[in-house]
Image (cartoon, rainbow, N blue to C red):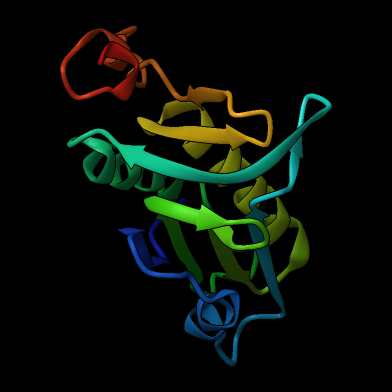
Length: 167
């Protein structure tokens, strides 16, 4: 398992992320399925109107993102032995309503493997990668949301100087 996987990209980006570019990057002649996920900034949260948001990454976020992707590689297997290709990017900085914040694309020869890996990738990134979302509401209030624990360590990133939660 995991011996025929290509991590095309695992990155943080201050620039807009192209869903089309992510899909194109993982496509291949052996891919019978390309599954993508685009987490888009919405205009509401918990019944309140959101105007915009900004993402702040801990200095270790890129490293943790790479570790999350690498840990999933070990569990990946294409039933036909063809390459499984992975592309993932998370935005940092200010984002407007409608912009993609997290984009993942996975290509495999069959849909089940592509769907499963893409879903697991999104869940693990949201749970483990130390990136915080600052939401700006139309009533003037602001809320921080995000991953607070290091994977498998119980380390609270919010307790150190690298987290906006500690400031």
